[in-house]
Image (cartoon, rainbow, N blue to C red):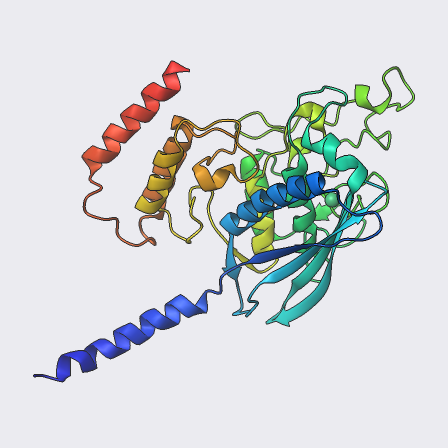
Length: 356
Ligand SMILES: [Zn+2]
């Protein structure tokens, strides 16, 4: 028996262990609080289902912390309220390196709006469920969007220009708008300006006369600045208002990269399982999700890389492009996934796209 070989292997194993522990996982945990204006049993179910989807979205795109921050999980309480729509704040922070992270938070949710937002029957009634988007938005605030910007040096109040370099680069590419910053909301009620991406706030009259025929609902939140799929940045998840008559808000690369500016480790949209690599495991996710439609805000976790709430050939093509460029830094692909297999899948994906 030779002892030399295990002796040589030991440092390799040690390195592997270090690499595995250096990247802390990212975890959110929720507690529904009860009070005098509490949730009904039916509302609790709606909120818990929506929280599950919002959690899945954030845990797919955020995969850990930079600077070796050791935050085991972020507990967030959800408290029933009877005014406003929803609001959120962090309730604890920690500093790691030069970054200040949220370590806990609270979300206020108006119980009188839950049924409305779970089945939209207001202006432009479409029966869609906006609760998961609403909660994902508020969780974004808990994690630092609009709340830890100035503390982390990526925003100066009343400039309406977010300057974190990762988000700016993402915004300029994603929305073909090379302005050198991400436009921040400068209008709306308390808590809205300086804390969201910019849109035309209909409720505040920024978009026109709220006293005209049809009131604010007759106005348009759109800015005319759109991504490759024609989605106006006004309808992004972290803009200043949910506009249910314009369908469900979408998650942009700009928002995800702004989390990178706030010290989080983030995953690419094609990294469906959020393990930090784009590879065969993600393709398997896409394959099992293929054909799904009418998905919610966590659709990324089913392979919806373009976030249009359906899993189809377009998502595969984005994965294919991403896996090609990420191959240099990603782990080697399993040998079984040959070019021929990929080409076959590409063909299936293309014909599926054409059929629709
Ligand atoms: Zn907000």
